[in-house]
Length: 439
Image 1 (cartoon, helix red, strand yellow):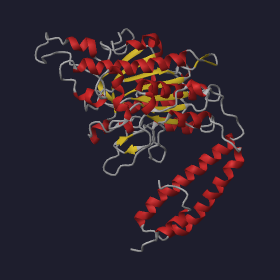
Image 2: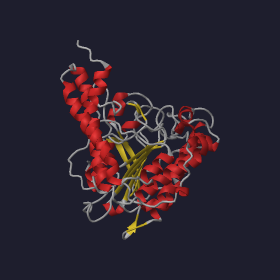
Image 3: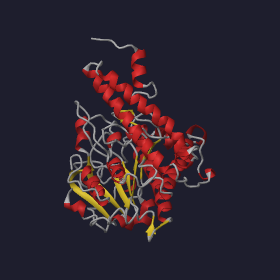
Image 4: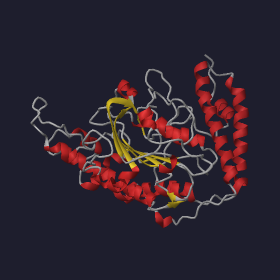
């Protein structure tokens, strides 16, 4: 095998870049409006490790052995579904939005169960892909929507997580996947996010030209290098060149928006010191506020936020706000005395954060309605009970101006692919595709 020196590789690459539905679901809405007539937005908020789901009976063989923890600490509403349902204690903070949301039971990603890796599937929440045994990853629904609305806003999407970056495939620190099957790096520092959205970029289009020149040289040099690589290296370098093309695309977009002033937002509106200095509650407040501001100012119309990854990251410590152990420990301590109660306490806390976010959207006028009316908000997890990849806890709120119909608890007796729901959401944005993943 021919060995290429590091110097030759760096010179050839420019040395400037690091290497790199079902009909029942369709009844949720009729045909969505023309995107040109109304702003349409999508937001997805993910939390890991599932939720508190105490068994209905203390003794499965004794139908009279009712478990008091079931009514008190079960995440899902009780009953068979429909419009006449009662929100669980955990979901009570969402009562003001009862007519603007749908709670789902019985949806999941079948490939999660094939992967079978416990808490390691959070990065696939929005596509349900099977990435084991050499299978390629696939685009997540948020990035599908962002691509459909390309050019409408300065940023096609805003990808956030408390951990930042991408993590590793089965313990991703992002829930967004691009059209090439690559995880989209997430931003996690409030100051960095604020500056990206609202910071002043000096120099305008002229400041972007040197970057364009560097990329042009990089691509030209790469052409002379590629024939000297073995097949495996060529595949790796193809990914690298794809990254360059993505950067070129980003520069194209940046040049188009260079003359458009960024929204004026008071920096004091968001605490920007980061988790280490702010603490968990203030950090979460900042992240949800940034999601809200990004949508309100129309910097983007697609946002994802992974509150915590299904591994070791700062989000695992958020239950400390309530004096509770880590989120992961809560998910494994449910069988101990008071375990379901402690887990449900944190479940409700997360619902409260989501409810406060919905309140902001509902109180913000947008056209002939509110920001909530034009934003489809998905909230949920890719696990139900501990290590159980069925029956995901899911809430879809808002988006009534997109054609979504709410005010119900949809409970499927037999497990259905969550991608059926994601396909329905995609249709509401005018994306004419007959399938999405395993839908």
